[in-house]
Image 1 (cartoon, rainbow, N blue to C red):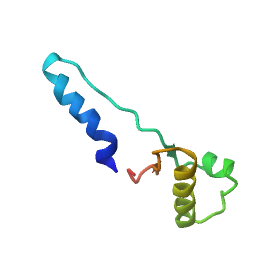
Image 2: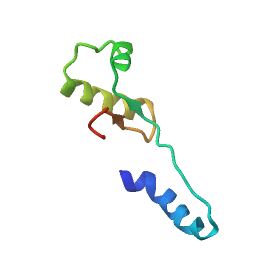
Image 3: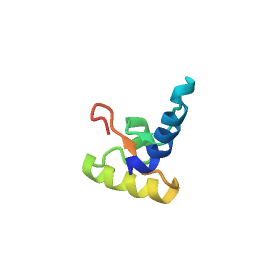
Image 4: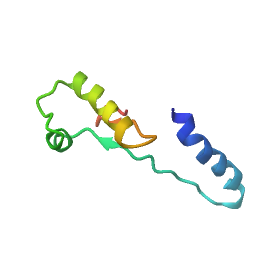
Length: 75
């Protein structure tokens, strides 16, 4: 999935690098925090169950987005 999101940006960055133009991207997603879990009404859910539900929710509610950042894990 990473190549699908970043491939076009990397190509543009390489195309324009010689002209001193930088190309950046912002990939939307959520960050796994207590606030997000509390807002979802799932604060007591174990981490494994939360990750499964979060991915399903993201796929259903945010087209082309299924990422959920977990602080400290880099994913």
